[in-house]
Structure formats: structure tokens, C-alpha cells
Image (cartoon, rainbow, N blue to C red; front, side, top):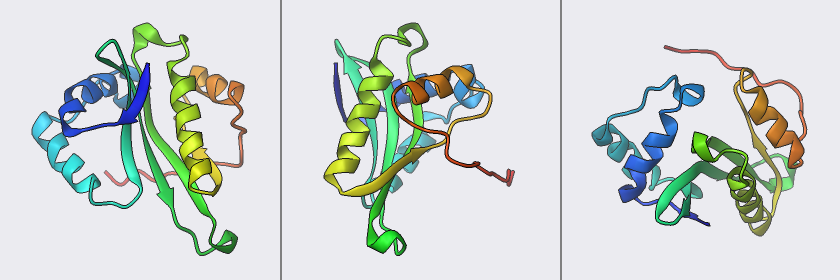
Length: 146
């Protein structure tokens, strides 16, 4: 298995992973909308979508943003979002490998921390994150705007 930066050609496989009921209630963007957003995302500095690929198939994905900060003496931080692993392959180390990859990038970029959030309903995901070394750190707040 390899982990690499996604290209626009990878979008159908990424959208398939996002169609899981636990991620976006089984709903995904159409490919045209996804391509327009992907093009825009490529303009952001230090923001990439990654895929895990095995035998030519996309089996996992995540997004990683490296943020510059005025606080923490200018130290950068990493933010992991939109993590997904093929349901039939969960529990086989794909998520762990992707998180190790993301953490490695954060270390290379001299981040002082890496964080992620997970929907409160995803208890299996929370156990996974804690098992690989993430700690619950405060509260995550959100306000739905739609």
C-alpha cells in the first residue's frame, strides 16, 4: 500500500469512500462540483488530499492542512480532516498507515501539534484514534449554518 497526494483523476474513488453512511450520510458531490472544488483546493498552500492505494485501488483518503500560526511563537500546526477507509477493509491497518503518514508530514513541517475532529457518533473511529496515540483534548464545537 502507498499513500500519496491525490490527483483530480482520483476523485471518483475518493467520492466513493465518502459515500459511506457514517461519513456524509451516503451523499456525495457530483463529479463536476467535486472537480471545481478540487481545482480551488489546489490553490491553497499546504492543503492536500491524500489517498491510500493498494493494487491500483483507492482504499483510503484524508485531507491535511498545515497551518501557520501567530500564536505558539509562530509554530505550525497540522489539521487532519475527511478521513475515510473502505468499509470492507477497515481494521487492516490502512487508517493507521495514513495517520502515520500525516503525522510524518507534520513533523517534517515542524508542527507543534496535529489535530483532528470526529463526529461524536463514530465511537469506533474514536477508539482507533486513541489507540494510535491521539488524546481527547477539550471540546469540539460546531454551528450548523445550513
